[in-house]
Amino acid sequence: MPGSRYCFLHQSWGVPAILTLVAGALLRPPLQWIWEQCVPPKNAELVQENSKFLQEVITDKPSLDLFLNGIKISNRVIIPVPKSGELKFMVSNVGKGTAEQIMVDVFTPKPWTNVETHGQWHQQLPLVTEKEGKLEKNEDWLHWSFISDFAIPGGASGMAEIPPIHLGRQGPETFLHVRVDASAKHAKPQSNQVILRFE
Image 1 (tube, helix red, strand yellow):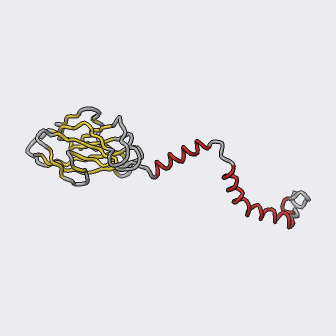
Image 2 (tube, rainbow, N blue to C red):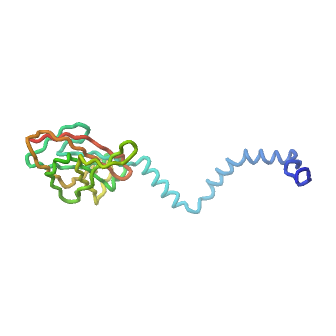
Image 3 (tube, rainbow, N blue to C red):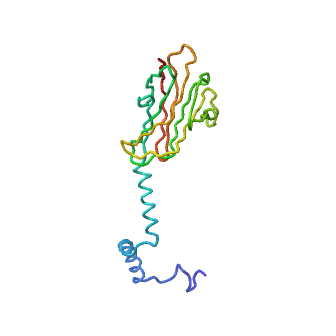
């Protein structure tokens, strides 16, 4: 009750109590550091594994370079297509971490239906885009995806070939605009508008 001898606000703290609080605040950080240095945690192996995993995620990330018919893919690059219509893809991992769950997506204009795929290439649902905060299907594009069943180690030697796509010519057009996306676990996804030139 307020005013009684048990009231918290009316207790006599005194100088010793205040000195104890100040000393505790000053001594806690160095004592905590000494404790952590001298007494290993109960789950030291788990802490070490988590630290290694976080380091890989933060610093040792994979980074993909994608090649089409021997040319590195970048925005608006023009890539020649032979008369056979073969599109040969190579994926290179130039990052430090291992590239896993690699995925390559190829989008062609909807009228261009003369596409043959092999291996792990599969036709997907139409492209989904966001418009005014809503997700909508973009029916103007056909979509094929390749999902790898292999991993590519990091470094200059980390390169893999994936099954080709055959893109048949459908008329007198010489140039065809396509979109090529690439992604992998922990890697920054990339999307490129590519111009194919038929020979």
